[in-house]
Picture (cartoon, rainbow, N blue to C red):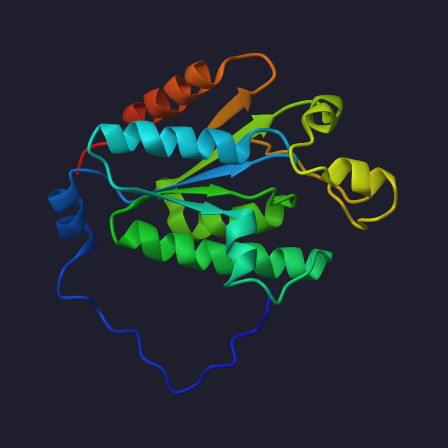
Length: 202
C-alpha cells in the first residue's frame, strides 16, 4: 500500500447524502467484485448482470480490468506491487461510484486476498465478492485473448495461474462455477443474491 503524500487537505461533506441518492435511484450503491483467473468469465458475467439490471431500470457501470489499464492505470505493470496499486486505485474509484448510488461491477483478476480485502474494508456491507471459478485447463482452452498461449511460450511473465499465484476467496458472497452452468443461470444467481442482500431497492 502506497503512503499518502498529499498534505493540507480537508474532506468536504456533500449536501446531498448517499441515502438521498439511493432513494432517487431506488437502489443501493454497491460493488460487485468479480474475481477469478483470466478466461474464467468475469467480464462476460459482469456485463450480462449489468445488462439485466439495466433492463430492470437500475443504474449500473462495469469497471473492467483491461479498460482501466487503458487510462487510469496505464502506468502500472504486473509485478505484485503494481497489481496491489492497481486494485487499490480501482477500489477507491469503485467506492466513489457506490457512494453515488451506482451498482458498480468490477472484473479484475485481483489475485491477492489482501488487495480484495482492502476494497471490502472500504465498502463493508456494500461489497459483494463473486468468485468466477473455473479450472485452469478450462480457462486455457477458452483463452479468449491468447494470453495463456503467450505465457506458456514465455512471452508474458508473471501471468496469473502460470508463473504468478492466484489466491481464491475464502468467504465470497457467491461462487459461480462457470464451466458447470449457463450464463443465464449464473446471472440469475447473482441477481437473486443481490435481492437477498437488499441491494435492489433504495
